[in-house]
Image (cartoon, rainbow, N blue to C red; front, side):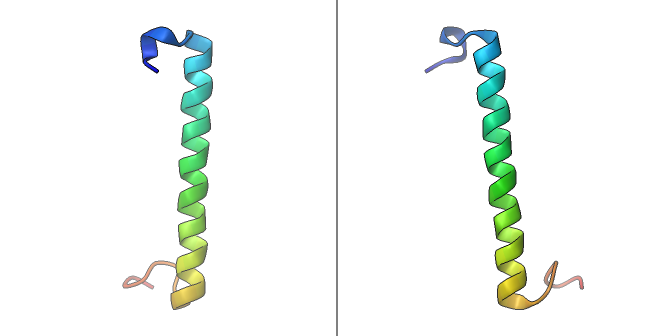
Length: 45
């Protein structure tokens, strides 16, 4: 699937959905890291 085959509105929907999924992966990684190490940012705090 390329950008040219997607409509512009569908393209932005896919972009926002991907951005949200990546943000949730980052949030899960933050929580997972805190549970394992007990530190919010290891090496800084």
